[in-house]
Amino acid sequence: MTLHSTALPLPRPPINQGIDTTNSIVMKHNEIYSSLFTDINATHTQSNAILTLNPYGTAPLSLYIGLWSEKAETLYISVTDQNERAPVLTFTQQVAVGANLIPVAGLLADNINLITLVSSAGSTTWRVLTEPLPPTDAQDPAGHNLFPQVTLKVPASDPATLAQGLYFISCFDRNNIALDYQANVRWFTTKDMPSNNLLRIANGNFLSSAIAQDNYLQMYEFDMMGRVHTMYVLDNALHHSLWQRSDGSLVGASEYAPGTRPDGDTTIEDGVSIIDLRTGLETHYYDMTKVLDRTRPCRPSNPPSADGSVDWLHVNQCYINETNNILVTSGRNQSAIFGLEVETGQLRFIMSTHEAWSADYQPYLLTPVDASGAPLYDFSQPEEIKKANLEFWNWGQHNVLEIPNNTPGIIDISIFNNGNYLSRDDAQSIAPWNNQSRVGHYRIDLIKMTVQKLNEYFSGPEGYSSLCGAKQLMPNGNLVVCYGGATFDATGLTLTCDPGYSDVDYQSWDGSAEGKLPLRELTAQGEVLLEITIGSGLARRREDDPSMYRYNITCFRAYKLPLFG
Image (cartoon, rainbow, N blue to C red; front, side, top):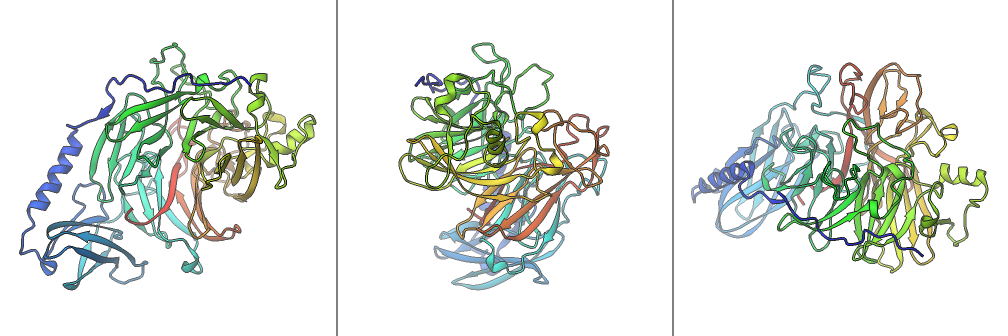
C-alpha cells in the first residue's frame, strides 16, 4: 500500500505568531479587574457587597459581586427575573479569605433580576435592572449582521426530560448567545467579541476567532464576564473548528495564508495546526495537499475566489482520536472524512463515496458494512452506488467528533451530514427543497477498513442546511442539533447558499433569502423535546449584499453547556 503522507508534520517557522503580551484589550481588561478588586475592603461584607454589571462592556448579562469573605467556602447563587417567570439558574462559586470578585451570569435583558447568594453568613438577594437586547435586523433594517432573533417554536412539555445546561449558539460575526429552555437569552457577548468557532476549553474560558477579528488572525480567550484573558496572534487563519486535546494543546483547521505556500500553490483551508496554548506557537502542521488528491473534483464547492485561491478541500473539523493516535479531519468540499497517523502524517482511511478517487487511494476507502460485518453495497453496480450515495455516505459534512470508545482499532464518530447533492451527478442530485440534513453515528474499523452506520437522525423538511451545522450527544442520551445554515425565501422554499456550487442550480425562488435555523433537543429515539428557531428576522435580497445575502444568518457552533465551565 502506498502511504500518502504530509511528509513531516513539523511546525511552520513563526513570523508574528504567539501571545500578544501587550495587547490593548487584554491590558484594559486587566486594569478594570485590578481596579474593581482593589476597591473591595473589609466593609464590603455580603450585605454590603459591590455589584458591577457588565464590567468590560462585552457581556451585558453578567456581573461581579465584590465582597470580603472571612472564610474560604462554596457560595450558592441563583438568578431569575423579579416575577420568577423564567427558569431559575443555579450555580456555585468559590471564595477565598479576603477580597473576591464573584462572577455571575444568566441575567435576563430588560428586566429587574433577582440574584440570591447563600453562604455561611446567610442569604442575600439583590435586584438588578438590565438594558434591552440589541436590535435585530428586523428592528433595524439599515443595520447588518445584528442580534439574532430567537423564537420558541416547540416548548418543552416536561423540562425534566431535557439535558442540563444552556444552549450556547455562536452566530457567524453576529453574537455569541446562551438560551434557556424557554428561549430566553441569558448571556451574550457584544459584536466586539469574535463569534464563529466558539470553544469552551478546560479552564472554563472560551476560545474563538472570526473574520471580523483581522480575518481570523486574532484568537481571543475570554470568560463569561466578557473579560479577554489572552490574545493569540496567528500567522495563518484558524478559520473553522477548534478542539482541545487532553494535554491542553489546540487542534485547529488552518491553512497557508494566501501567497505564503512554499510551493507557490494557491490553495486555502487545507491544513491542520496543533498549537501550544501556553506559548501560542504551532507544534505541528499537516498539509493536506500532501495527503489527498488535490485534482479530484469538488462536491460541493464554493464560487471561484476573486484572488485566485483554490478551496479544493475546505477543512471544517479536526480532532485527535487519542486511543489510536489518529488525526480525524473533515473536508467539506471533497465530502470526505479521513484519518492520519499523528506522528507520521500517513493516511490511514477515507470515509467517502468511492467515486472519482484515483487508484492510489482505493486501498484507503472504507467499505460500508452492516452490524454483522457483511458489505452493504456492490459498487460494481451503478444502482448500488446511487443507493449508497442517497442513504449512507456523508456529503458536505460538518462537526465530525468523537463518540467515546477506548477500543484499539475502532473509531466511533458523530457527524452533521449536510447532504449536499447526495450524488456526484447533477442529474441524480436531490434539490434542496426535497432534501434534508441528518446526524449520523458511525463506527470505523481500522483493521478491517470498514464503516458501519450505528444510527441516524433526519431533520425533516425544515432542516436542510447546505452549510454549517452542529450537534452534541448529551450525558443523559439526548441529542442537541442546530441546523446552522437552513435558509428559505419568502414563499418558504428551501434554499442553498450557492446554487451551482453547494447544490444544483435552479430558478424557482422569489429572489429573497432568510436564515431560520432550527435548534432542537431530541431523545435518543429521535423524539423532538424542544425546538427554538434562530433567525435574522429579515429576508435579504441580492441588492442588500450581492456576495453574502444567501448567508443571511449562520451558526457554525452550538452546544449545551453549564453556565460556568
